[in-house]
Length: 406
Image (cartoon, rainbow, N blue to C red; front, side, top):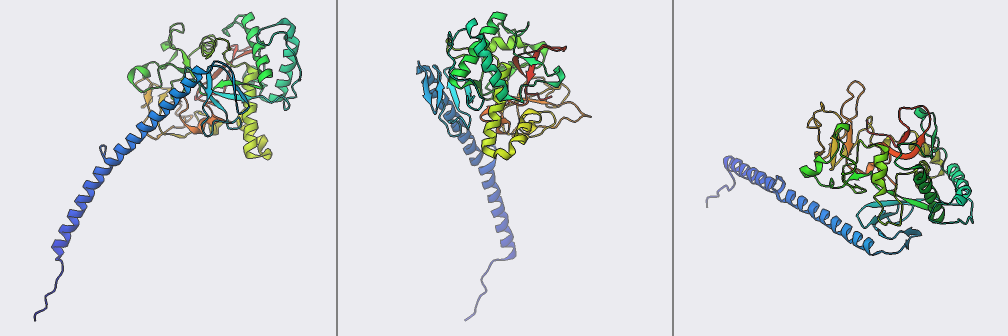
């Protein structure tokens, strides 16, 4: 019987491989193209995640709106009109306890321990919530203790002769009487409650958390495009908002004053001692995580070189999404002179001395890199006005804190 050799010819093998390659290419395109299965699945997941976050935020706002009285959560007094997020990583003081108000603004609790600050105990005020001349001495005693506790962050700027002081000056946005009353109420509240709330994000422009054209146009790009403060949108403390830019200290104070979720509460720019206390709070929580042996380096990281967690012109880092404005009309990405949605996985450039263009200002909360104890952009991105008076000879009498992206 004749035995036949069975197999595949070389031509048939080549044709088979080509067909398989074509099928593989079609399969890959089907999976990964712009309209591919994986791309659609990723898009669907992102939309679902965004919808879940939005739904969670709405539920928190509803809960805050139903809180008509003060409550307590993990040792912190939650004011009426606010509710703790109770999210993982946001529910303890050491992590940075976050609460949402009925307007959707987010706040972080700044602890001021009485024992650590050697604050006087047992003080009784003539009036707990209003200004009283009889309480001046007691509040001054508390202030002295707070300054001791928050040292060395109280020294001010070398450019302004280290002379920043919490005292009234023309242009701060308050009358002398309002300044004195607001300061004393703040001191009494810190003493009574053991801390205060700070906006989780830089003050953003209401209506700019989206990426539609109208939202982007609301962003200020120069002093000549400033919105009339009397008719401008309200300030918000929300993720991915375009931050208020090119505002005077008095304008910023007017915006901050209107952010309170409850008419019985006071909202304002931070006083200088409050800014210092936030720095001290960050220091203590970082020491708790990293160990006492690292305290000096942690203090330096906060007080003199916060580049590793701030948006500065000499630092680079990647951001996945959000909005960006390049502070240069001649720079390629910023040539249209409006805020834009940044490209995927945008790498912020370092501004070189020989090429000083391209400093990038970002929307609020754009990266976890720029966060400490759940407070975003406390270092860099934009200067922050405080209600301190720089009473040395200077071009401006108000005190900018936190550094900026230029």
